[in-house]
Length: 506
Image (cartoon, rainbow, N blue to C red; front, side):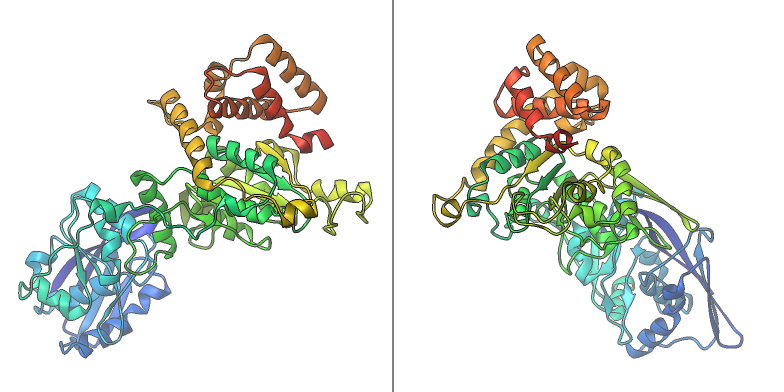
């Protein structure tokens, strides 16, 4: 007898429908899976056989053929265990097809018949809503993840026996629902606050500008001056995630399998800090079957790259396109996948290879210092809007003095500046000053004559490229927004020029 169960697979961060066709016919006992399955899918036959028997149901001693259609789409992961098992039970008459024909099923089976969590449930739920599918049968640990998508009935099953009873109408399982508060809730964070940082008023001002306009920033200073401490607090002054942003971020994390069991949506903006030995595939994304990298896991959040010159040149140059386009397309022989990568880059670097404490006592020669920071190419630096110098704090300032301004006060100014930008870019895809295109830059960053002369002098003296020129204008626009000014003034341009220290050094 033939049975068909609807399931799904993940390609990039999008889901695609897969029909699990099961044919059970008399013959020598065998279990064959076709339709471009990977090794995990092929191994499902042993898990399915043991799970069916261990929940007290009969496994057919016949010829079993499982086809995963469409056959030209590669399938990976253990999420097909549950649909394969239900397909076999339906083909042998142990499961009624009425409800099963309307469901979309996914889940991994343990040998005892329990249903384990799988990755990618959130994009599958979004896909099911777009396609108008019926109930979504998912593992109990994935129910919170699936239920955040309105318009979808997420049926949580803990065991294969639960699924059989539900599909046969012997047991009713109420759909999981997420309330509005459960979908998006304020992030509790980890207690990091700018009030903990002594001194560094110039750096804090630069990071406030970066947060207000979603600008990329590079901090340069000796070891132990607080670069990492500052970077880890940037997320505390960023605007909270909107519902749409939370769904986008959680979708990427769901595909990567990073959502914890029972978790719905991410509550706060992600902060990712990969080690400088990270590979190109680990940072950008890739693999035999493309998977999201760190830049996609930092989508709508912060990507912190400490010891930036220590990253390999190939990895650093691979960052250029995602920084510009806010997405990355990974092409492999097995297929092409697009991953979102709208992150804010916060990087840190020592001024020299040895990490000497200060310039007067630095043991490195000027050519050595130049070669070290010279690992950062000019095209990459052009895409970093602010260069902040982080000096060593005087002992008196480090040991005494008042606490710094709290993150909540800084965030209020950032939110006010972002509100001005939202009004300015209403009806467009632009969400912050850093993402303005050329036409918007010319329209919204017009300069008075004196400011234009100052900018022209800076471009000539510093040898700025056209890209760096436009980014400097956008930083000036953000500074004006923080000041509540409708037009860019000379002092806004002057302050923006101060944040190009690496250009002055070249």
